[in-house]
Amino acid sequence: MKKSTLFFTLLFFNCFHFAFSQGSNYSIKVKINGPKDKYVHLAHFFGYNQYIKVDSAKLTDGYYHFKGSEPLKGGIYLIVLKANQYYDFVVSGTEKDIEIEADTVDFVKSVKFKGSKENDILFGYRKYLAEKSAEAGQLSRTMQTATDPTAMEAARNKMNGLQKEVTDYMQATVKNNPGTFAAKVIKANMEPEMPKEVPKKADGKTDSTALFNNYKAHYFDNLDFTDERMLRTPFLQSKIEKYFKELVYQVKDSVIHDADRVIMRSKKNQEVYRYVLWMITNKYENTEIVGLDGVFVHLAENYYMKDATWLDSTQRAKFVERVTILKPLQTGVVFPSLVLSDTLGKEFNVLNSTAKYTVVYFYSPDCGHCKDNAPKLVKTYDELKLKGVEIYNISIDYEPEKMLKFINTYKTGKMKNLWDAKQKYYFRNNFDVYSTPTSYILDSKKRIIAKRIPIEEIDGFLQFYEKQQAAQNKM
Image 1 (cartoon, helix red, strand yellow):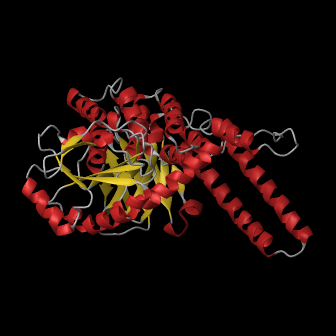
Image 2 (cartoon, one colour):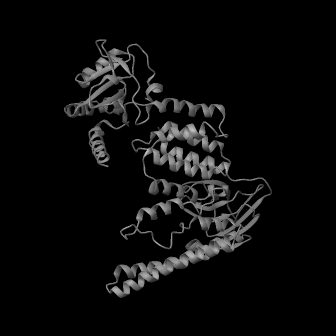
Image 3 (cartoon, rainbow, N blue to C red):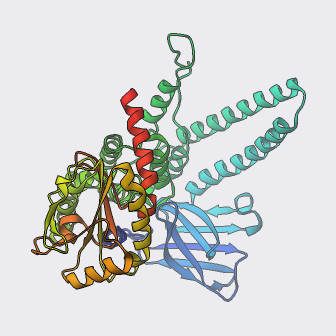
């Protein structure tokens, strides 16, 4: 629901304090071949796909001089020459004066720092990595073009050796620089260590499931959830997004289990907890994957409504309101009783439908999208009634003459056309109808199996659903 997403986004960013911490001032002087008559900006990452501007400066005496009366909070900062051209460096939060000199032709190779041990560490690693990446590229090309098996095997062995060199270098850098933020940044980019002996099944084959479970269990070992500075890097968000995209089975119970696991890690730091909770909530409140609507309800009930201390009473009430609406409408739950009247005054209860599948379709006679979709609705009804599907076409307006005009104009008379003649329902709150058309698909037991499926996709969804049910019944 886009409107709710905007609320949660604004709620999060309005509550968050970004660039500055308490203490003395900062000074960052940058000598780089940037524009002479335009502002260059200092910014920091916030997640991997956005940055927050902190300061601006014009070229003066050969330098862009960023300065402020409070120190910068730690994170990965950016020198932004223009929207698609920026160069990053690390700030631990303890530096007062940093000087940077670099050529944009090859920033990593040319950059020099004064007053920043952190960047000496980080860019020592980056320069090493650039060298090894060039070697890896050459080996990769050899492996792609080699026709001699011996040469290919030699290149493959060299590649494995190169990967071990890089891993050893990263581990040594982290070990030799304890307490530095640069070491934490490098460590966050390391993959979890896997077992030296590959697990085997009883038949002697590699146990890929055990390898996967081990990788997943240790996936976050190298990421420090206690350090708030990680919020101002791309690594926290990208690691969490990869985890839920590639390692979490997308069914409600699995997502909830893993969401709880990640959130509990983040609770060691209040600001990290707030961000991680917002991020996961935002991901699953509006997911297009059928059956995951209960994830948002779980997160709201167990976190936002319990211990989100940054919310005021009005903000918390909004979560209570959304949960109150959504909880009885979750996928897998029996649809609430809905008793409506047809154009002749006869009452129908959706729960009394004897169809194999029941589509509850809410529309407004004045809605442009509803008018555009009406021909598709009629076509879908004609195709699906032979497959045991009933459609309840429900007007959310309280003017029956408008409903009658809609029925006559778009020829929907073959299906059940209903309205709330006794004005018992507030459809937005009772059935989460915040836009029209809105649809629910119910199985024979009137359990919700899908929501907001476009009318032209209902047939395809039901085919998919039946194949899925048949596969589960064989298990």
